[in-house]
Length: 122
Image (cartoon, rainbow, N blue to C red):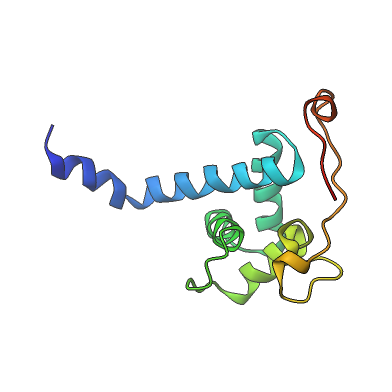
């Protein structure tokens, strides 16, 4: 296999979109303790509600979760992420711009065995 063929797929925007969407699903699964399917539906419904592209919304969610301040997104996309998941990302009540000082949101566990496997600390 040619080395260029391996790098060509990394530049393919379809793969980039798939990767962003999958990563965004993972962010929501971790934050909301939901299934990947529920996370996907949440991303699509949020994008539709705010009239933004689902892949752009997913990319913004991942970028914000990573604390990457170097990327620019449309104001509507940022507003959608903030409204839908801001509290989970540290931007909820009591948030003053410092993620470590942000109050953690109340987490509802959807998985019946999770409380036995781990304890969430405030």
